[in-house]
Every structure is written in structure tokens, then in C-alpha cells.
Length: 631
Ligand SMILES: [Zn+2]
Image 1 (tube, rainbow, N blue to C red):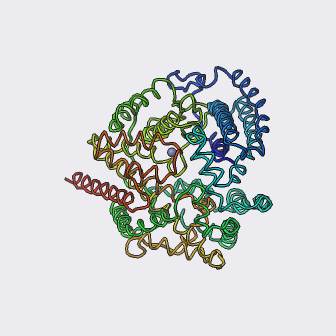
Image 2 (tube, rainbow, N blue to C red):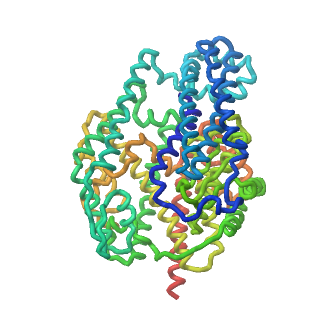
Image 3 (tube, rainbow, N blue to C red):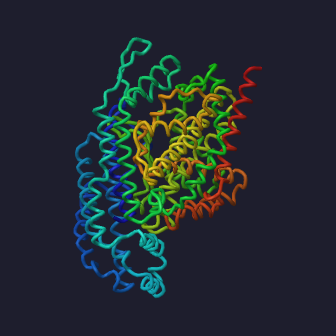
């Protein structure tokens, strides 16, 4: 399936996934009570659901026209061009149709009409995917010489589709004969089984312990309760929560182990049949990320473990404990402080914080606020959480928020605006097929804005308690994003390497391996006291079924930290370069070269060094603030 379409479908599926969790957090306000200016204006996409319906029907009528190109793409550069032009136009229309239905449904997920629209368009998307399924394999089969000739003789093809075609053709060495491909496709039926078993067992069948809270209330300790109570200020409760929670996973160590082993064997099956050197290479090649980027991250983080240890010692001091235990990791560093903002104050603060990005950037931010790109307030039935969508390519990006007026909400708004600006500039400067930024780059612009906001607030906030709250938050983000995700990445790599060497994985082996890495990261005995039980933590992490995905959290944060530092240091020229070379690039090139254009080379250790430097600066600030408070 085409990458582009994959993204469209994926985002739709993703939205369905989140639906289940969302109704728990309801608000009293109905949508009609919310002032217009806080609601997005979907009529900029379609005047009405009727107009949407008309366009949908017109779209469906056109799908059979792809038939005329089937088995003909290698005939001439003109045929290939016509097919891709038609494909691009149709994919853009589908993307808009999907965006409208999803967003309408997100406004009130209980409403049945938008939900039906969403299901209808999802079926249309499947129809479209089936009708266009021939394109990618046909492009793949065109031999290099013919393709060179096509590119040389057809300027429009070269200009608009060269990268798109390269991106398909570079998969040649890993593509099999049609018969073999059919076998591989059939094997796909079994591919999701390990993860399905994991999900069903963990979410439905696994017995969970019950604990008694200090107020006498009894709670079933499932994953959600664990994330809530592990952050309790009550240490005895935290200890109990950790012991009971991981104890329950430990009871099924063998089962979880067998399941994860199956998942790894699946990865190795694909690696072998597609002729990759390693499972890591098989996972990173579709996005064209060199494996050295992955190795480099692990190496850099390992070299900088003393920075994590400095943080852990600071945590120990702030919590006032004699010994720091693993169950102390999520306890709040600093007692909660209230920081409240109206939407207008948030807007004002964000605009000031983003000033370093320059007028061109701020002009679009203003448009987002003034022309109703955002759905800001929560209302009954609205989808929870936050997202930005750039799917309405010819219109503008949209943002969904559930703004409650806390600092985190302001930060989320800045974050989503980062995505929106990335979509806005890429959509404006690239063709539809070259506009969607790759996953590896997706969280760079958003976290860059979060960083700018935090730095601005820290620069202007005098209240030491508030300063500490923000600093503490950022520090924790570095621990959980840069260190913890890399720790996962290291474990993931190790278990794949073991199976590649012919070793079998069992639950106890996995626990021992995980525990060794955990001890290294947390400085066992010298910095943190770790009980053997926590070696089972791997069983709780669903990401080990995502095939080398999590390292991108760590690389994104490092890249955005490096970019922010450059913008603050170099000023306007860097801000302009950031807009022109990064935000406007979409997927017109591969992720690593795009980052290189703004001076961030992910094949070197420099971006990571920037992140560790930042972390140390934050800790310097915390120590300074604490000293001042004592005076
Ligand atoms: Zn994001």
C-alpha cells in the first residue's frame, strides 16, 4: 500500500482507537453554550454535510478510472505521470473527506450521523486502496534504466514525483517475486497474533490485585490505576503499588515471555525473507533511517548516564529520602502549585514565547487563532486529548484541544501549534504526496514549541515555586523521553540480536536482561536501590510489540532541543532557515538529510550532547532556585 494512503488510513484508525477511552472525562458544557471563537469552523472544508455527501459520491464514481492505468505504468513516462497526477488528486480529495467526517464526529462522539459518515468514508478509503494497490508494485517493477529514461525525458514527472518514485524503487532489493510476495502477504495473517494475545490477556483476562488506599477505599490495580497511584505523595502506598502491580505481572512471566519471543520471531521472519542484515535494518529501512542513528543514540545515552544519575540524586534530595527506590521515580518532585490561564492569556503567552521564530511564523499563528482553526474548549461528548491534523491540504490545518486552563494545557496548545505550523508550511510548499512529514520528524516542531514556551516562562516567572514546578516537569520529560525510551530501545535491540544468533527467549531470561539494563541506567546500589522484581517491567510495556518504534521519541526530543538552542543563539537567520528548510520540507526528502539542512546531524552525537547540556542547565537552575529559597 502507498505510504501516503497508509498515513490517511492510519490516522483514521487511530482516532477510532482513542474513542473508547474518552467518554470517561465529560464536562457539563454542551457545545452550543461555547462561544464561536473557541470552536473550529469546519465549513471551510465543506459548507454542510450535504456538500460532503455530494463530493463523496462524486469521488466514488471516479475510483474505477484507475483501471485504465493497470498494467500500463511501464509503457511510457506520460502514462506514469497521468496515473500519478490522478492518484495525487484523488488522494487529496479522500484526505479532505476523511478529515471532515473525523473532525465532525470528534465534536460530539455520541452523535450517530457523523459516526456513520466516518464509517462510510473508511469503506471508501478501503475501496480506493484496493483500486490503487497495483501502482506501487508496478513502479517497483520498472527497471532502473527505463526509469532513468522516463525521468530524463519528462520534466513534470521529474519535478513532482522523483522522490516519491525513488522512495518506492529503493525497496527493490527487499522485494520478492509476485509469487513469493503472495506467500509473504498470506503470512501476514499471523503477524498480529502476538500483540493481539498480549492486549487481550493484559486488558481482559489477567487477574489484577486489589489494594487498599490510605482512606480505606479498595482499588483494582490495573495499568490505569498503576499510573495514577505510582505518582502518589504517600511513599508507603507507592511501595505497595509497585510490589503488587509488578508482582501480578511476575506471576505470568513465562506466558509474557513466550508471547514476546513470538513477536521477535515474527520480526526475524520478515527480516530473513526480505533479505535484511538485521531486524533493526528491516524496521528502519522503510523510513530510510540508517541503523547507525539508532546505535548512535544508545551509545550517546550510555556515555551520559552520569547526567541521569545527577538527576536521580537531586530527586533523592528533593524527596528527602535516605535511599532512592524505583518506586520513588514518579513521586512529584515538588508539591503541586496552581498556575491558571484563560484562553486569551494562553494565546498571549504563546505568541510572546514563539517570537524568536519570527514574523512569518507568527503571522500564521495569528491566523490559527483568528480564523477558527482551533476547537479549544471541552464540551459534552467531545473527543478527549489533543491533536493537530494537516489532512485538509488545500484548506489549512486544524487543532482539537480540551483546554482546562492549567500550564499543561497552554503547553499542549503550543505543542499542537507546532504540528500545525509544520503542516501549514509543508502543505503550502509541497505537492500533496510530498507534504506529509515522516514520523521520524513528526514530534520535532511540536516539542520545539514546548521548549520555547517553557524557556520564556522561566525567563519571566519570579515565583520560585512556579519556577521549580516547570523546571521539574522538563527534567522529568528528559528522563522519561530521552533516557527511558533509549533504555527500551537498547532492550529491544538486545532481544532481537539474541534471537538472530539462534538463542531462545524465555520469561526469566527477558527479566534478567531487562534488569541488567535497568541497573546500569539507574546506577544500582550507588544511586538507586532496585529490587529484582522490577526486572519484569518489560512485560508491562506494550511498545516492545511496535517494532523498533520508541527510539524516535528520544531522537525527536534531542533534535528539537538542538534546533531550539540554535534559534535562540543564532536568531533570525536560523528561524528563517527552520521555516524554509525544515517546516516547509514535508516528505520531499528523507528525514536525516532534512534535519541536516538545519544543522542537526543525527548521525553524530552533537544533538544528544545538546539535550544533555540542557538537562544539566535545568538542574543548575533548580539547585540555584533551591538555594535562594533557603535564604
Ligand atoms: Zn505531538
